[in-house]
Length: 609
Image (tube, rainbow, N blue to C red; front, side, top):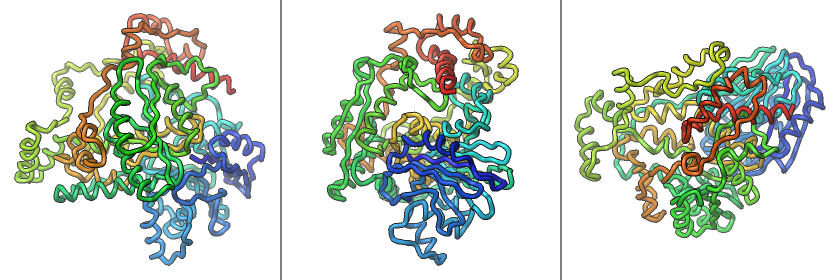
C-alpha cells in the first residue's frame, strides 16, 4: 500500500517544508519505489510509491489532468472497463494505459461528488481544488484502505497513516477516552470515527469528507444496498458466481510474484485455485507461493495437512510456519514493536513475523478474508421472507429440496437461544462486564450503559442476509483491514481479499440462502474439480483446541503484571485487576489482559514522544 499525507490551508498558507519532510519520513517504508514532497499555494503533499499492479499506477503524486484539481492517495480500482465505457459515453477521450488515479480524475470531471458511488475497489484518496481551495477526502465502501485526518484551526491534516499526523505540532497526543473505554470493554472501538488519539479522526468506510473555508463536514456517499433476491436456475447461480470470483482474483493478481495466505479451509484455497488457473492461462508472468500458519507443536493442527494437499494439487510452492511455540502476548517483550493503536491480540507477533517473511518474496498477498460473512447464510430470514411474500411453493421446493438432498433440516441460525434468555430474564445484560475499571472513569464515560449497548444484536432489514449485511456495513471489516495494513506490519505488503470484491458481495447478498449459502454450498459446487474433494466437502470445523486455553490451563502460563503509571490508574483499578487475574484462566483471562495490553502500547507511545 502506497503511503500518502497532506496538509491543506483554508487561507492559502503554504505548509512548512520541515513538517512535510517529517511526515514523509513516516511514510517512506511503505513506498520503496519513489518518495515525493511537493507544495503549492494552500497545500503540501507527501507520497511514497509502492508498485504492485496489475493496473497501471501513477508514477508521481499528486497527479492532475488540468493543473487545477489534484489527486493524492492509495488506489486500486475494480471494474475499470465499465467505468471507462461510461466515461467515454460522456465524451471523454481516455488513453489506453490510463492509471487508476487518472480514471478517478476523469470521473470527477464528469460527475463531481456523484462519482464516488460509481467507484469500486480498494481506495483512500483526497482531491484538492487549488483554485477553489476545497478538499474532498474519500474512503472505499468496505474500508479496505485506511484514512485519518485532524482539523486544527485553518489547517486540515490527512494521511493513510495515523503516525504521520502525529508529526504535526498542532495535533495533540492526548488519548480519546471514548476509544479507550471501548478498548477496555471489548478490545476494539465500535465508533467508526474515533481513533486512540483525541485530535485524530477516522474517515468511516463509504464516506467522504469536505473541507472548505475552515469547516469540516463528513457525508455518507454509499452503503450496501438492499436489493431484490435473484431468481435463477441452480446452474446459473454457479455460473455467475464462478465468473465473478475469477474476475475478482484476476483484478487483484499482479504480474510477477504473489503470495497467498492459505489455511486448509475452503475460502483461501478457492482463491489459490483461481490464482493458479489464471497464472497457467496467462503464461509464465505469475509466480505464486502459498503460506500457511499452523499451531504445531502446541497441538496437532490439521490446517497444514489440508493446505499441503491443495498446493500439491495446484502445483504451487508452499511454506508452513509453525507458530505454536510462541507464547501469548510475546510481543510485549519486543522493544521496537510500534503499533498505531492498542491491540489485545494474544498471538500478534507470529502474525507480524509471517507478514515480514512474506514481504521478502512479494508486495501483494491474496487471502480468503470475507468468505464466512458472504458465503454462509441463515435459513430463518429466508423462511420469513418467503412466508411474508406468500411464496409457499418456493418455500416448499427450497426447504424440501434441501432436506431430500442432505437428509437434514437447514440450520436456521435465528439466535433463538439468546432471544429466549432475554425474554425470560435469564441473560444478565452486564454479564462479562469488567470489574476492574476505575470508578471515576467508568462514571465519566458511562461505561455500564455503553456495555449494554454493545451487547445488543445488530442486524439490518436485509430480507435474506441480515447478519452478513450488518457486518459488511459495520466498522468490523474496516478495523480488520487496518490491523493488516503496513502501519501495523511495518513492511510494504498489500493484502487483498477477492471474496470482498463489491461485485461479488452484491451478487451473494441477492442469492437465496437455501440452498446456495448453506454451509457454503455455492462455493463447494463451484470448486468441484478445481480442488481436492476432501477440501471441497470438508465441513467447517473449529480448531481442535483453543491456543490460549492450552497455554493457560495446560501449560500454566500467567501474565506478568507491570507497575502501572498514573495515567493507567485513572483508567483501571489495578488492585482489582490483580485479584481478577489470579483467579481467571483461558478466555476470561484474555479479556482481563486488556489493561496490560494498553500499558505496553502506552509505553511505546510515550517513548516515541
